[in-house]
Image 1 (cartoon, helix red, strand yellow):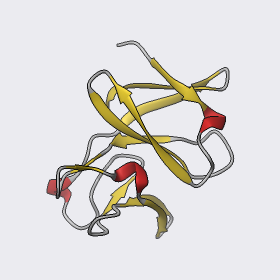
Image 2 (tube, helix red, strand yellow):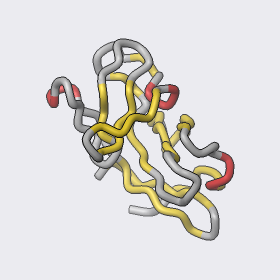
Image 3 (spheres, one colour):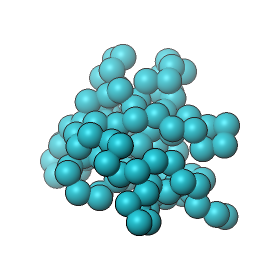
Length: 109
């Protein structure tokens, strides 16, 4: 599988996320800090089937980074998409890397 160019790292403000298209999928790409550490998850909140996870709030819970859904506040672990409240509602995680200052994604891991 090949990598897909999404945007420049500096296009994402540290501490936020953005929504990108990977083929037909909406992917939420998160940049928690002002470095090149990035995470990518499905953007669809599985509880409500709404495209909102990229607009969630980043949270550090017991040393793990999560995104908190803006709807009912469920937490999805950034490294693998596991839902803290109910693992049956976990979301897909995507491989993400930076090449020459550009963010690239692969299909779900």
